Image 1 (cartoon, rainbow, N blue to C red):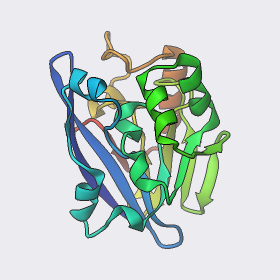
Image 2 (cartoon, helix red, strand yellow; image 1 turned 120 degrees about the horizontal axis):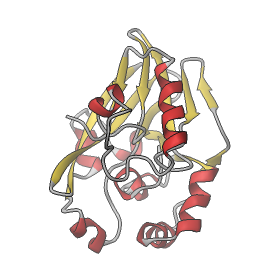
Image 3 (cartoon, rainbow, N blue to C red; image 1 turned 180 degrees about the horizontal axis):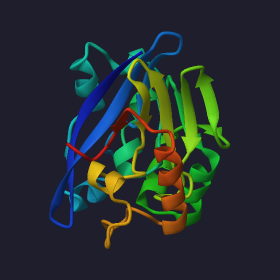
Image 4 (cartoon, rainbow, N blue to C red; image 1 turned 90 degrees about the vertical axis):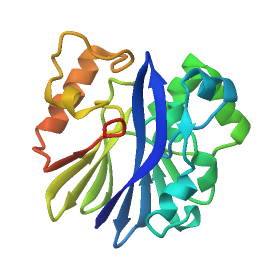
Length: 212
């Protein structure tokens, strides 16, 4: 199994610039798996967050890959900076928690309308899913009610792909900081529980979507 980080541009929240990363997992049995696809959605949303976007096709090309090579996309959640380039992968499995899919229709915003308009077909899953002996999906609610993370067993040990379960390594290391960044936890109790469960795994590597 090989891991490749994708540079998908950056966005700005409250004057702070956040990088946007996706991750490719090159799996011997399952093929090319992509965790999160980067920014996309309505133009007004991209302008509001001052998105400087990079296409997922260009990011994949850095590693000799193309969108058609991707067999499975795992969206950690359905915010615009994690599922925004899903339309490039209509040929692939697009895996998301059923609860997350239901959440976007309960809360309805510009991203919900955009997902409907793009006619994206998701594979909805309920809870933890084992994809292979060395790769699984685990529910990690808190940032959103249907957030999920990916857990891989590699030569290094346990590697985690945690989406927005923690924006940065600093938050991961210090989840009890006095003030979390805006939007980090929609449900603080569930968020703390999810981080505790992930830390119990004693990961050798944690892959962040919004840290350098």
